[in-house]
Image 1 (cartoon, rainbow, N blue to C red):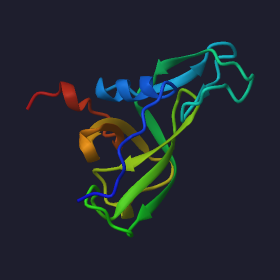
Image 2: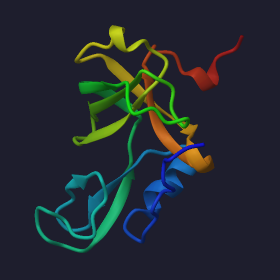
Image 3: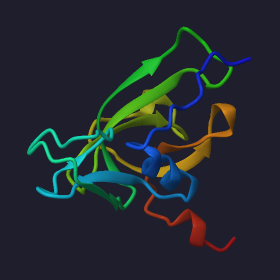
Image 4: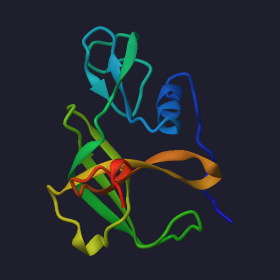
Length: 141
């Protein structure tokens, strides 16, 4: 059984979780100064505008920093659990779990990409995986 709480979906972040369900990494954008921000907020920290929209990010990422979690263990995750802080080419940063690579093989500056996976409670969230340069959805076996 997992101790992970259900997501808290609000009017400020609903667009993000809807994007995840559609396989899109949506990043909030100020409707006035056009600054990008994640996590979503009700007001732009740069110009204080409440006008907002979003962009759909490319899914590319560069590993800026990471940590490896060993404890406390929860049934919702595989351990060791790598969690990365990545730079997006769109100009913002994002934090997500890293899968598909042994944490010992992570290197700062490595290319990663986003995929979307089911997490606790059936929720779909972004996950980072190594960027092999191959479009996994459009390859023939």
